[in-house]
Length: 146
Image (tube, rainbow, N blue to C red; front, side):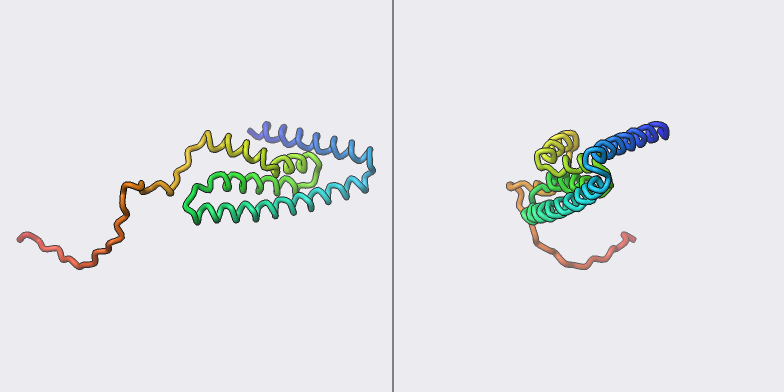
């Protein structure tokens, strides 16, 4: 397990350094560093604005007693996108930018929701059943049969 983690980390670093080197050779090291900083700032702004919009949608669905599963999956993908965009590097910025796009989020929702079954509390009582809100208040004592 540790060997696999090491290999994945090594491959990730190799990809990041290769992309950084290629971009630095094209536009220069200074502009490459500025590009990395700007992609982090722009990505953070996009994740923040979409996250707020998604939070409002989730709040509305919960208030209307609808299932907010899609918004939860979108929120998790936005969280991962934000983390990837804050990590310096072009490869992580590309992965984070991919997770921001709504069509990609919809694909994730379809894949995750199909594989998992989520319990919803909106259909707890069917329309045929009536919810009885009657409260009966009383006191009791337990008598032994002696």
